Image 1 (cartoon, helix red, strand yellow):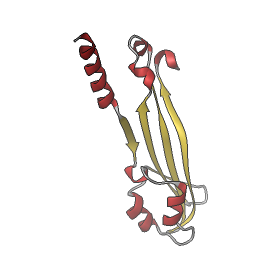
Image 2: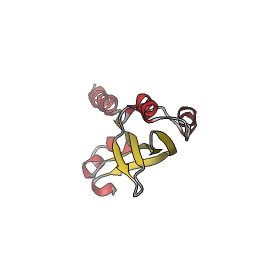
Image 3: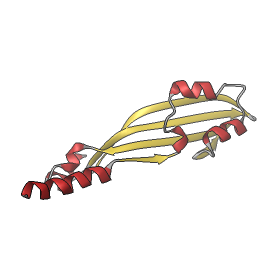
Length: 128
């Protein structure tokens, strides 16, 4: 009976913690290869990009006036160390991936773009 009382809260914590995605949901399933099929330098327009990925997270300009749109998406999951009793009082840790799509426009057309996916981690407390 005591094992059941301990296992049930632990299972609930694991199921409730899950994954957290932050940012532009349009990038969630995108890869470098899939982006190549959707964006063609010198051909794809701002309106086509906006219809594919929505409004950019940030917009900046180069010194010579070219517009740059930036999209980001981060997907994080809690690491196993967070579920170890007593240890989790000293800090927490989560890891996942970050996707970033940067597009530069020359007038209304895409002049350059880059898609990157990198490992990402966040550590707090003693785990820093």
